[in-house]
Length: 131
Image 1 (cartoon, helix red, strand yellow):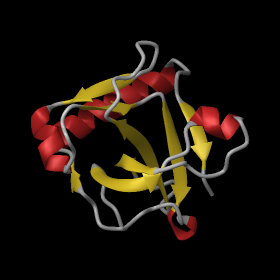
Image 2 (spheres, helix red, strand yellow; image 1 turned 135 degrees about the vertical axis):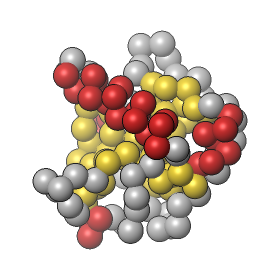
Image 3 (cartoon, helix red, strand yellow; image 1 turned 45 degrees about the horizontal axis):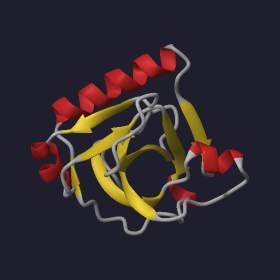
Image 4 (spheres, helix red, strand yellow; image 1 turned 90 degrees about the vertical axis):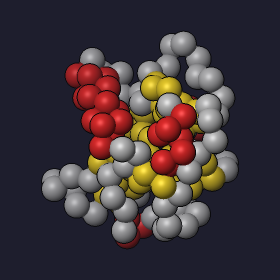
């Protein structure tokens, strides 16, 4: 359905919203499908993309103008990497469409993966399970 690096519209549920008892994202926003793993082949891990400059205490990467163009995004924007939504594809009702807007380059995807790995190692990564 999706490949790593695809950017799609999804009703992303922020961790603070999930902690407050909300069950679905308030609006569809671009997200990056960062990884599908052999351990959980039916799930994807989605990282939110925002056009609002993130607060300095968040873990994020700025998305370059060329990457925005590849992904079908307006410039400037940022990808938030200290939280993600884990979604079982057979239970995925919050995707606006299954057609990607575009995708990030393999080089940028490696940068994202490295940042996420470091965040997990330092316990800075929060999960919102959407199954």
